[in-house]
Image 1 (cartoon, rainbow, N blue to C red):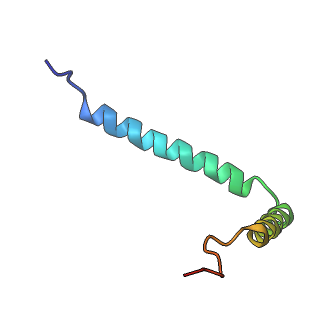
Image 2: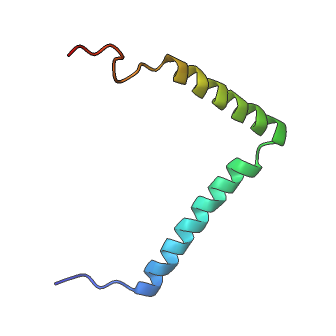
Length: 65
């Protein structure tokens, strides 16, 4: 026999989980000063560009045939 669940409790638990996740996200976003956030974003962009320049092409240019 299947287990019975209280839909109201399940709905409330799901809402609470979403709110907790949003609170963690907001702590990360708003807990850092604007200068630090801008520096970190610029650093991530530089790192992504460095990695992009080092990627190999998947298709060789000089195909025989």
